[in-house]
Length: 287
Image (cartoon, rainbow, N blue to C red; front, top):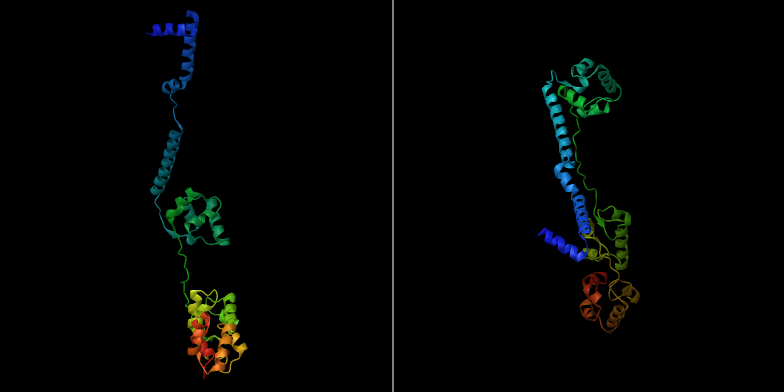
């Protein structure tokens, strides 16, 4: 069968016998070169790959750590002393050289006392192996911390009269800042004074916390009366925040016709004035 394909290839490419054999050898060597990595991997495998090297290193580190821990466990402490009571012969008995024990005593006398085992790392020449070696001999000092006392701040606030308080007194209240205190005073000027605590909710930009504080720590001692409704003029009526110029002209026109009060005037007022009719009765009483 191979011979049959060989002759078919010669006939197709119009090659003689010698040329066909040369092309076959060329194809064979090309295939051998391409597949050579596979053969070398299976015939001559690498002793270790990257993963094997990492595993070997991890095993070596594990053996080293186990040997250190076993050696530390084998060393039985012959005594236990406080770190600040250790003398030079005690440090030497714990396994430290004489020069290092002198260095520790000098550090404690001139710098600070040793309280924790980790404080030994601050001394030049003390590494982790030596710290582990002397740790069984040492007793750490307990750091005495003063008890934490939480002082309950008693509120030193007083109830303010909202119609007489200034910005300094308002800013002393919780949740009332400089901007909000100015808005409270500005709205008080527009209203000619606060007549009800419900009006606090109408202050621009007031938060629920500030509203609660105002309702708790303020009071309205006297209702600010602008004028009697019967003696009020256009300027007194139009100057109020709840009343417009149209409302002022309507009220004065009705008063010229007959003696009336807010119940009769309410249907002809603007929606804003109708909404605050109860407050208007306080600002402009009928009697």
